[in-house]
Length: 339
Ligand code: NAP
Ligand code: F7E
Image (tube, rainbow, N blue to C red; front, side, top):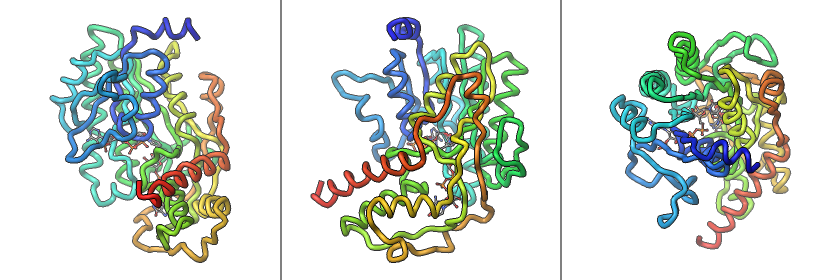
C-alpha cells in the first residue's frame, strides 16, 4: 500500500465529468491513492458540485477544479495546459439516453466531437510528457445486440443518438491509439448505479420515489418500459476498473459488467419488497417515458477484464438495490424532518 502511494504520489490526473456519479467516485479513489486530482467543470447557473463537496473544503481542498466545456476546444486546450495530466479520465457527457432523442445534435457535439477535441489536445500534450487516456464508452453501443452476453467482439447496433455518438468516440479513441501512438483505452461499461446516481435514471428514480412514498412524501411513481433488461453493477466497483485500465503495460478495450441481467420490473419489485410496499398501488405506466427505439437486453461478459486487469464485480444486484434504498430512505427522512 505504501509502495503504491509512493509510486503514484507525483501523478496528476484530470477528470472530465468530475461532478457526475462516476467522476465523483473516481476523484475519491484517486485522492485516496495519492494523485494530484484535477477536474474540468462547466459553468452552470446553480451549484453542480454537490457530489464532490467533501473534496472541496475551503481551507484544505483535495482537488483542483478548472472551468471548461466539451463543446469548446479553446477551454479544453487551456484545461490541459493548466493541469498537465499524466492520466486523463474522460467521463464528461450528455449521458441521458432518452434526452438524446430530443437533443441529438447537442448530444453528438458533446459526446462525439467533445471526445475528439479532448483526444486532439491529449496528442499535443503527449509530445512533451507521458499521457494516458481513458474513454468512457458504453454498453449502449451494443444496442439491439444479436449476441448475449456481449463482449469486446460483439458488433455494435446503436439505438439512440447517444449510442451513435459513443460509437464515434469509441472508434476515435482507437484511431488516436493507432495513428498517433496515444496510450488510449475504452472502458465499455454496462449500467452502474449508486446513491450518487442522477435522479432521472431509472434505478435512482425508483429508489428515491419508493423511499418518499414510504414516508408519505409522495403518492405515485410514473415509469415507462418495465420489460427492458439491464446488467446493473455498483459504480464504486466500476471506477476501480477505469483506474486499472490506465495502469497496464499497453492500452486496450474492456467490457466491465456483472454478467447478470434483470428487468426494470425486477428492480422495482425488489425495491418495493425491501420497503414493504405494493407497486400495484403506487406505480403508473406513462407512455411518454417509452423511448422511440429501445435497447431490450444487455448482459456483459467481463472475462477479458478479469483476465488482464484482475477485476471483477464485488456487489450483487440485491446488495446494490439495498444500499440505494437505505441511502434514499435516509434522504427522505431528512426531507420529512424539514432538512
Ligand atoms: P453523469 O452523472 O451524467 O455525469 C456526466 C458529467 O458530464 C457531469 O459531470 C456533467 O456536468 C458533465 N458534462 C455534461 N456535459 C458537459 C459538457 N458539455 N462539458 C463538460 N462536462 C459536461 O454520468 P455518469 O453516470 O457519471 O457517467 C460517466 C460517463 O460514463 C459518461 O460519459 C457516460 O456517458 C458514461 N457511461 C455511464 C454509464 C453508467 O451506467 N453510469 C455506463 C456507461 C457509460 P454537470 O454536473 O455540469 O451536468
Ligand atoms: O434506463 C427504462 C428505459 O435511463 C434504463 C446511462 O448511464 O446506462 C444508462 O442508460 C432502462 C431503459 O439507463 C423509465 O427505457 C423505464 O430501458 O436508467 P436508464 P440507460 O438508458 O440504460 C448506459 C450504459 C449509459 O451509457 C447511459 O449513459 O429503464 N425505463 N421507465 C426508464 N428509464 C428512465 N430513465 N426513466 C423511466 O421512467
